[in-house]
Image (cartoon, rainbow, N blue to C red; front, top):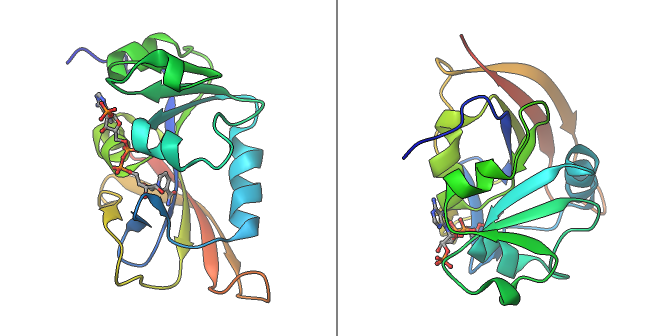
Length: 170
Ligand SMILES: NC(=O)c1ccc[n+]([C@@H]2O[C@H](COP(=O)([O-])OP(=O)(O)OC[C@H]3O[C@@H](n4cnc5c(N)ncnc54)[C@H](OP(=O)(O)O)[C@@H]3O)[C@@H](O)[C@H]2O)c1
């Protein structure tokens, strides 16, 4: 597949201790601060997602962002979105001087991790035994931790979590 390495791509995801990201088509847990963090980082940008992730969004297309959905399905089922059939086509809708964010799910993360420049990971300090969807391995040889911000559990957050950013080495 021909790719566009000059288009800057970042991945953003919430992972448990075993790299799990979802179960039964939904997120693993509800962490309001993580949703705020996600909004802050992606606001105003292009977001690229797989069809199943679109289906998991409670209100459809995310406001104040250009939503790009990859699917073989009909475009009219994805109101407010740019609908594309391949990653290459998704990158055609991205810019060379602005980061586009891959927001899931597992299939999309696996396909785009090798193309990404930065990762915005929320590490949830818990293991969900019934998870069925996973993020690929983030190796220390390929990725350098650039920032880390730890948050304790509280009445609104059942698990502690850490916001971690990574930059691609080399
Ligand atoms: N924790 C997190 O941060 C996070 C973030 C996002 C999602 N999630 C979770 O992840 C799960 C969904 O992930 P998933 O892996 O099942 O599905 P997904 O990646 O969201 O969507 C998969 C679908 O997208 C299309 N697709 C994906 N890659 C493609 C490619 N390279 N070329 C063409 N089409 C492609 C296909 O759609 P068609 O079948 O329609 O052709 C495919 O069936 C849910 O549980 C969701 O809640 C978690």
